[in-house]
Image 1: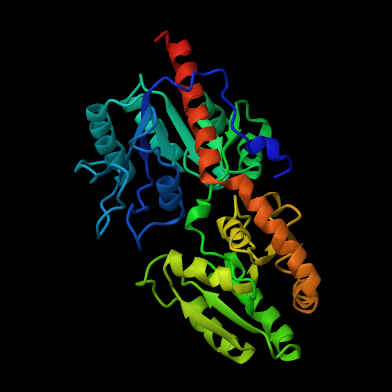
Image 2: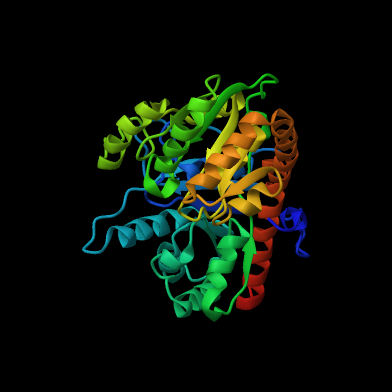
Length: 387
């Protein structure tokens, strides 16, 4: 994030007192329930408009979870209708039927350009805001410049970071893309410990894209010289306690054991936050360009010091509140981890900067920014369509 002002709520000239109803669409793979929710579902729950005390009411639609859905936000499970079409088209068709019953003023579709475009055809009179959490250049119906230009004409496009925005507009795409960063409810963050555990912590999917192997290799070189420190890894191949044992994970286990790194497996989101509130250093060495980097934001809010990849949206999220490194440059990572371990004053300085920076991403503030974008989308659509 280059300019904090980009994250401050703007009204776009829309009257905020005007009531409206929003329906939010989850991607098919997301589940709106404790212990099943991925990053998008957790964000949607945080950002959902309150059902009382505000002028706006929100409903969430998504595929049925295995357990009970989150409370506090109206949720309707959507099962794809039977039809001789793709699963995505059947899901969009079922969504459209439910949306017609709810009669919202706006649809907010998360991370699926193809579903947003199908809903545009099924619901031609309804404003649609598409929120992109990943690189749009790899998404169906958004891979080419022509597809993204047409997409920007059909729906209002929002990215979770400036990096996502620039990726959408790359190759000469014509269109407008707004930025709405991911948010964090600081009231749900555990209180950071004043005396931090001397722990290097990795929290995320245990896959090559997340740099899990480079973390182990760096720890193998660092830990023998600093016996008072330890290293833990929280995560599995995917979200949930039933994540399979992959070849990558099986190969990493003996390397981690030899390096003195403890693999703790999948843990709940609450447990991850509690671990971040205790650990002195959190490492996010993603090779894959993180579109935003929620783990980094959570670590800052928990008072941990950050060493993060210099790729994707991570540098913008962290700013000057952490150290950057090339995830494939092992000597650089070892050197910076050593600096953090041996320099207590540096850790204290970066931890304080992280706590301050996390304030820019508070849910209460960014919920207003989101509402402003939604109202602007509604107003623009009504003007365009003469409604």
